[in-house]
Image (tube, rainbow over all chains, first blue to last red; front, side):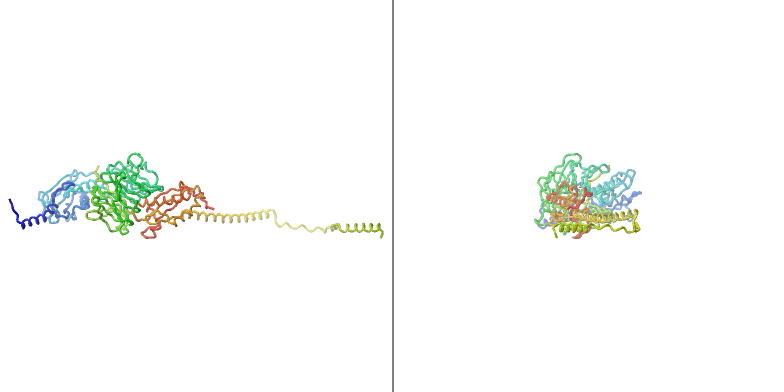
Length: 437
Length: 199
């Protein structure tokens, strides 16, 4: 039996306090997935060097993969011009792991074109081994949308190997610019219009990304339209005339929920997305405005904006409208303004916009303890929409001089500009993860 | 004088008096003077008539023009009154006394033009949520329609639509642009050709 003196016990406790966080930081098991056993300091991101890629499209491939991994905000991509990257090894020579470790790389990514696509290897410089190797097929012609989506999927899997969490590069964002609905890759490339000219607003994805819905404004009111991606459209048959705005699909994709107003306020209605059932009202606003519904991930609850207390606030209720409760607290008499809720895909947070000092800012509220965080402060920032990883969200901001879409990492509050549309862009809506067909 | 003498004298006097009262005989005609020269022949008379007609037409046209101008002015005033926007406070659909006065001025026009059909459009300033502003604009248009209906105007002659903050009359982030953009406007959708000014 080992007996420890008090002083020795204190020393052991001290060592435990000192090393346990480091040991936890190096834990290779995450609930989202399994990552390779990279060693890096706690609170930092693992450094990664992407080796130059051979072939005619090698530079594009390397640039896209580097950008995707950097956009994930979980990996520190060490930016080096291809010609500045030192020789890694090869031709039978052992890779020079120590040199790359000195350059700050916990991992080295090697992409080798072959007849099938790309052979991808992730090297662990700490262990001096190739941890994972896999061959990925590339779809479509180089630079096409499918080809880029193949690379984005590859990036997401590499991110999962390294961090344990799958990336969200293989996703697209809907938005409106010049009155049309557009889609753009998550890295800002490949923007294409999906609708004809008009005054489209408020696009939203079907959960399978097979369709999207949006509102089209006309001289006599607004219509809800459902459109197959690359296919036909249909106007929601059960929508009566008047104001019809902010459509969204339920998580199972069967229901479409939107706000309808005529002469006595605006309420939220639901109907089947691909049938002709009469719409049923699910909020009783009594003349107030109730708009912008957003489903919880399980589809059992909705968040929405309501002016029932005299100014816009965010409420949550059951999906049938019962058990409505105020989510965003305010002091009676305040002229606060909170709107545009979007329920995070992991169900923990609701993002919304709030008037702070006369300008809208992006906020989140925890559903566990109702703690509110402000994530932006520069310019006017509004219309948040979560990425599938529940860590990033796209929003509209005028911080660059015109309204464009930006992406926010809510953990670090870093932002990047997504669109540079000449006519401005707004109403970003992030898709679920996509797969090459 | 004897009575018979007096009677004879009286009769002579009477005869003389009656003769004296007779119309004097026509004097003998003078030798015929030359006939006056005709100064306006038929062509002249036609010309004069035409000039007279032209003058009359000109007067009538001038009068018609005055009337038309008056009608035009009245019609323009009617259209301006009908089109006059009403303005709202921030995040409000409440009609101020000024807004109600603006709407009251339209009432005679609606009553004088039963075939008139208008679209009331609700608009907002750029502050706040783009989508929530569509709902706010709808409430503003509905408030205007409700007020006019309460004054006896057929609600079926008024459509309402919201443009939210999508159609500002003044761009920019100033109090003046905000004030001008928080409005409800009127557009004629039917009956514009037959529009008359109220009497």
